[in-house]
Amino acid sequence: AYKKDSYLGGFYTGRDQSEGYNRVAGFDGRWRISGLALAEFHLLGSLTKKPGEGDTQSGHALGVRYLYGSREFITDVGIQDVSRNFQVDTGFLNRQGLTRLGALALLRFYPQSKFFQRIDPFYWSQHILDKESNLFETLNLFTFRVWMPRSSMFRLDMFLGNEVFAGKRFARNGIGFKGQSQLTKHLYLSLYYRRMGGIYYDPGNPFPGRTDLAFVTLEYQPMEKFTTTLDLTYSDFFRKSDSHKEYDYTILRCRTTYQVNKYLFFRGIAEYNFYYKKLFLDALASFTYIPGTVVHVGYGTVLEKNRWDNTLAEYVPTDRFQQIHRAFFFKVL
Image (cartoon, rainbow, N blue to C red; front, side):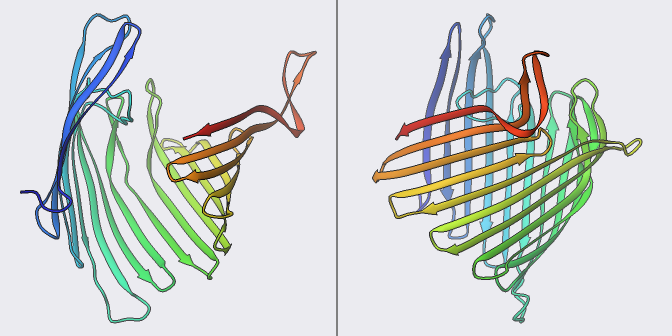
């Protein structure tokens, strides 16, 4: 007798190609144990034959998970196993050949204070056996988070762990912080910074280093139907051996949305990639005629400060942006 929010289901999906195929079938389910606890599971199997290969490879992905949540305490524990040959072409699979144990434990304190509304220390971790190298990796996150008025939040993070790549283990220790606040009725600000051990992901010659990651988000909403968001993302990588900077990567992105009414909205996105020195511009109009029927009209373009030189038969730098790609689409769902 299943309680509310409990279910048991199965599915099959497949993708056939010329002289090859990928077929996946499985079951998943959820059991509401009580008002505060539930358990989940999934069991998937795949059969894959790649074009030009005679053998069919079988694989599996299975997992179980337990969640408990109350006003003062939250815990989430799960284990997953993904075989080396498991493949699902119709979905997204980040990594194969591993067994993973994940755990979260979060406490909530409600101090008698008008300024400090809630304090949340928590621990999150994942421990993985990489089946290809037969090495263990672990990542442990210790966080102290404080909630304040105006949806303001500040948190401190400490990372202890390592990662396996190309048969080697690399340290991933580090620190970080995040802050956010609704500064005014119309203005929201979010900041995030993290410094930790990193990996130069070259399969032939990986090496350790240090990486910095930073996000800044500024959202302005002068009226209910109009919102514009400015995002800045920055990352870099320095060699551990001599502190030489291998790269830095910065993206500036502005997204503006205007909801004319419940049927029609317009959206524009401008993004500049400082690493590739490219400007991306996208515009979209979306109209919902009836629930379930949506019409999309969009246009996108990519610009660079390069132009084609017929004499040299190659692109050369220029002071002005030149259009190098463009696309228009019309879609009805």
